[in-house]
Length: 318
Image 1 (cartoon, rainbow, N blue to C red):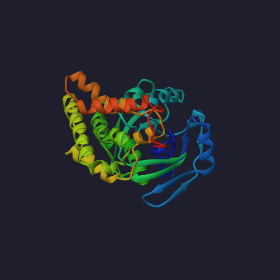
Image 2 (cartoon, helix red, strand yellow; image 1 turned 90 degrees about the horizontal axis):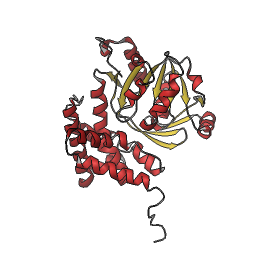
Image 3 (cartoon, rainbow, N blue to C red; image 1 turned 60 degrees about the vertical axis):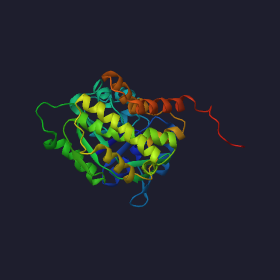
Image 4 (cartoon, rainbow, N blue to C red; image 1 turned 180 degrees about the vertical axis):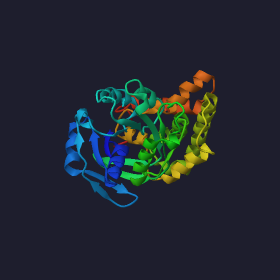
């Protein structure tokens, strides 16, 4: 297949390298000229689970180069989804679009600009840590699920030939994938994992696996996930994991060395996705009258970190 990937961050680079290695034609779209030049010269360098891998993949600044792709994977931060959707709108109705982003609301935003019948949604618990432009560490494996972004009438996603073609593509690239119905259940199940891990790592600067080694962070993780469960159940979400809290801890173990995307953002003094993760639980908890003190605190602390970049005490020279 000819695949376009928007966003050469840690997960975008990991997917691009592995999908290309599996025999597909891959094109990366970026907005950063310096990064485009670096990746075009050196290729993608992926370290991790199966040793080191270096793959030459073209990177472009021109969205028009995605014309003719069969599938476009959206791997940008949630706060950039609207911009990407507006860019992809100009490609016409040809390619399918699969979001593998964190957070809630990406599918709906894509659906404002793109044909709803061509939008797929997915989640993955694979861990990827950026080591520099075009360089990534594959820091842990986990489940990957995909499904329709929007209901397709009476169509059964598990029998859909195109969804199963995408599943096979990801399977061959090393991302064991299942096709599932009811995409909202899928996204909220991943949200529970993110709200348990990301903000805590951003605040403590710990890798994923260390969160369950300390009683303090372990208890906060449990409280954040439990609040997410209460809110999700009130919304009618049917979580795909039989024991969601156990699944969050399992992901911590499977991606133990991973530096979460939110911690990577904080270390680089960049904007985080907190509004699309713990912030969702905060807003939905207020909407339903459900107390969510842990997610409220995590959200406000991370937002304070964002707002105070460059103003904190470093400790140097003391």
